[in-house]
Image (tube, rainbow, N blue to C red; front, top):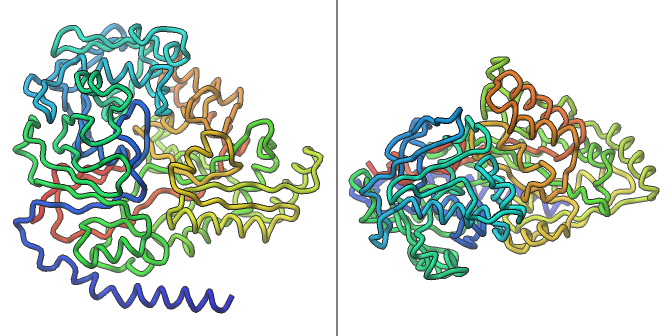
Length: 541
């Protein structure tokens, strides 16, 4: 124990002693720089949004692709491949988009309506493995196609002509414009898809890019790659950079050191490293509409199918200690699945994430009572839980915190921890070979339903197999008969949030707040609360 304390103090002193160098970093960077150096904290596994959906992938595609719309620096939806933001017709169920005639792919091909049809049909098909087919629900026949009951050709998306795209919904979706900025709705060059088939997006060369940059040098497994300015981009005069480099950096100390050595212009730091730079002039706190939480495996053969055990886990973790002493990066504890700051409930005028937060707080005595009730219901004397996560430094720290809290405060409870590469941990979760997993949900668009959808019974991202009749009914009503009824819709949202808290569907840990060390000469970055950070209009002053 003493050895551990001394090691921690020594590490902290090393971080603090390097602050002078960090403070001087980038001080003499030339204003003519055209290359931006960025990091990602996990591997890039695919560029094909129809078969994979990860944060690293979406961060890369944010810089290299565009959908019908994009979010500008003021967080407003503006036209991208579409010439403008359109108003629906047919009682909110029909959208007609006119594409830019000068929009081209990085290979010189014209961006056409067929490129959107191709991408959306691939992503909604029953064979898609992205886990994001559900995001298309509401578009005509999407749900039936994903379930394998209809052909992808029946999807409510039509290429009227080369530059006109028509989208038909099964019901009104007032939030559709916000959704269309997401990478899940990006187009795919249908000629490139046809050429490479199942290999599309498996390397940077087996794709085309219609955004400001094109990905180069990713062979499918390497941990560094480049993004070069796309000379065919319709708005290339607004792009100041010639190149963005990206490398995978999983360790916070390494990220800090690379920033200090001018090898990163924007480095995300956590834990002891973040604690040591909280007063640094280069530090920027970026609040995100995301919640870090423990996903719980509620399959019938798993212990956490028991609600009492889930409630006990919610109470045994001291989230204030977690954010203050373990993370120390500006993150705040959360008692709700939906992040405060996501959106305001228009029917109450209150922040939705705040008004619906759980009243449960850290309470070891009550947690033990609930744990004992759960064991009695299961007719078991003890339970061993398997915690799976990726092998990043932050994930490992969270693992240790959770394991220690359970071991020290819950009798008849044990926990094994498996911190493995992200691909392997993803496979374990997909296969149901876990009891708990540390994960993040980052809102796709500024509405609570973006959080709730993935916990509905048949959602492909419901890897915890949560199935609650009341919750499912509320979300179904919000998507259908109450979609355009403001009062009823938000009542559905509040009831759904309350139900998640009552049933302990997840264990919320903390709100997403990133600590970035940013080059003082870097400007023009849009740090969006919802969605990925946008570096496409960045420049060095």
